[in-house]
Length: 559
Image 1 (tube, rainbow, N blue to C red):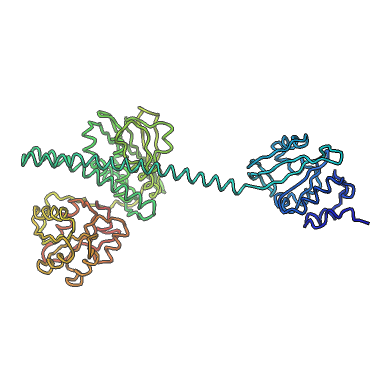
Image 2: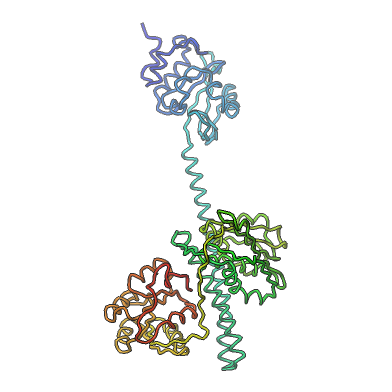
């Protein structure tokens, strides 16, 4: 006699489960009473490795194969023989119209249909591609539905991730192009008056008034270019984690004075009224003075740029609970009466390279405020921005903890009244830079010779025996590092060797220190800083400057 359950043979784990299952509680009843049409479909799906199921009868009893069991997850094996609607109740509103269509004799197909399933004890977003087909009994009536399906969740997520990545790349490319265009604009702007000023000097000759006006203009434009390049380098340093703060207790008044001085010319040129309101009681902060001045200077620069001529800027400091333990907090406000900020742009004000439409042709690169936020974050503080909208001005607020330590006295570098009384050798393959540096040294009383490569520099040193060598690092051929090591080998430690170079990263300064440099100045070096270094040296007295490195002269942010 033929086994009535023979059609369930070879069906893997699910087939074995079907043969041993107690079907008394299933709306399908025992397999030996199933109609031949259902047996045929079940036999087919059990032999397939593709995920399949059949739902049969008025209550849609559910049967499936091993491959579909993986889709069921924790619902297997309890799902076998149960009602379709009980098994997939969480997605029933999504699929029941398709089931109804199949039970009415119409096949359906869906590709990447999104379904929120609960098959592992939690809701998860999934996607499936499948078809529902009507299955007819021996009388030709639709008695059930058959499904072949595949889960496409991984593919859909991968495609979305790819599209998102492509979108980000397109956006990054667009922002890069915009950035490069703006960078070119920002570099050309200061170059134009410098070039015109040089022509004016040539035409006007030695007319003192014309030369003085051109000189002050050139100083402002060079300072602008230096600021731009410094900001670009600082972005790289901060984002790569290569900046280490040189924190020390510092008076707020001195920090504000430095920041205001850096922007005084621009504020005066626009006839902006600047009001400074700070407490009379000394306020001490534990900050990196150079970096904090950079933050406040960036805020003032931003306020000046976006405030129309004749407007107003307020710098206000408030101290809360200065006598408490732990110490209180500084609230520093920079408010302007300028063009304001649109509400939609406020959340992106501190984003790198972010530029809002504020009606300015010279809106800049979108670097200064991003740097300000990151530096404040590094100090453990907070910075925020407020604006009522276009035409309503803006205000930036910095919050920092106070320090209980006594402030450090930091002398400022200035070339006023300082003279150079030493012999200097400039070695630089940039002939213009070397010549102008030598002219400045001689104008301030020093003796100077110039060489344009390492070999010429070493010959000049053997003949001239300079007290100080200003040495470019990135020369062609033998570079400055090798040249410095050779100078140390031949002339010892008594010679002050200063790296005067465009390479200004912390790694560059460390490399210079290892090569034997006494100090490190980044081009274009502040003439006041250069003169301060040279004025410390006297003939035959040797180097009086500590080696280049972080925390010393060469490690400070001299630009």
